[in-house]
Image (cartoon, rainbow, N blue to C red; front, side, top):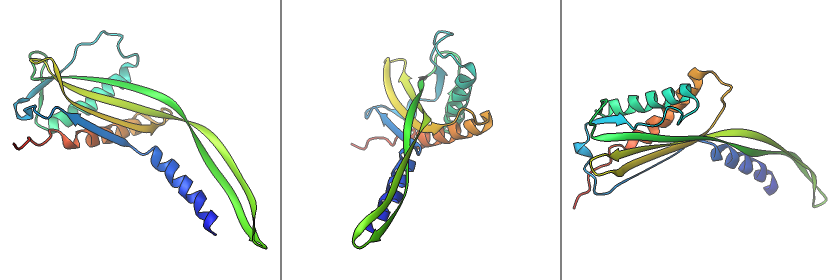
Length: 175
């Protein structure tokens, strides 16, 4: 019976491996209270090939920064925002099988199946333009399905940005 727990354990690990993964980091000495405005960093027009995804990412980030009290401006902002996004193809393995014990011997079969999944990875960078210095970075990665409707994918993106910006601004360092 101990071997029967092996299959559910692998399935749980595979499922959790593609749950949303979120991190953030920031400059410890930065005074985040002084940042009140932001603007998107100027990038070449062809920097991101899919304009629809570009618009969705910017809209999701704008929503979060607005909720944090920051105001988007076109010039002379306290913060500049940039991002990097990539979609990679990864493989998963699903195991299925049966097992029985006869006369003390394990008897059964194990079968595996591989499938391709797309994993979206997104990094959001906040720069202090006066100091020309990165002050905060958040990132998220999650399995995505680009065949789903744009509404469903935006909902996942929005949730990812909520989680990324959950800890923004970081608490001030107490000396």
